Image (cartoon, rainbow, N blue to C red; front, side, top):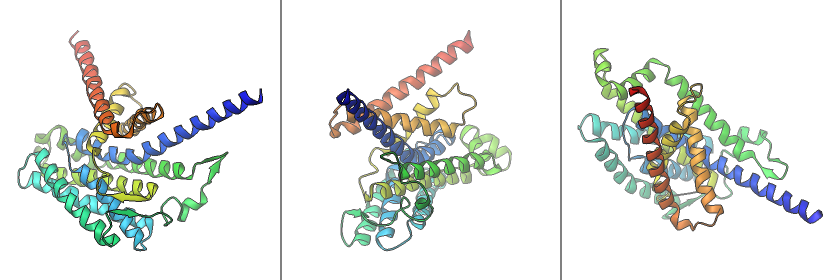
Length: 317
């Protein structure tokens, strides 16, 4: 009896730990997914510069913390750097008339060098910015008021991440209801309508790309402070990850009318992370992670197209 109870208790603790990891990872990356939602779903702009702006935010935040800057201020700095990078993508597309994919590729390529220069200058020549033992948003200021553990599970990081994501979701939902936010949505769905309103769709597109990349950069900063490390390669595959999260969330919860799209994106990210975590639990080697991400992305695309096909057939009937 005692052996069985200990076994069951151990299984329960392990299951709770896995769920906690999935939620933490999902919340961290859902910030990036919200940025991709702005550019991909609202603006209809496949922005590849996300692969560069995500590590940009991580590196900027880590380097600033290493040099004694408050971790909360480092988040703001990362957000601003992402804004600037997104504005460059928008400028290349709107002013220089480059294609969306080319604009994103050019900014991403430039950021490969910029990120490397920042990390080497900030760490004295190192290729990895380590902030082990440094203050982060998870152990300073208001975070210290939150409970450290519940039972034997450390939940402070999860609570902080949840609060950050909920605040960003609320801010985004309210912004999209403003005049600027409505113009942003109109720019992606009906550019001619924006022109008829005597507004500049190009300016809205630059703003949307700036905000989308700012969120990607902020996500990188949060991830860096969570893992206590940052490097130039951590953004690889983030476009695929973000698009998959958006497509999964928007497809699975398409018929849930009371749920806002931002909530669907957050849930889609958590589900996507859960799939990756299950693969780790069953023993899939880590070198297959990127392949699994690509496979899940293809599955999400197929599922999304099937849903659209069913809806089209119903409307024709």
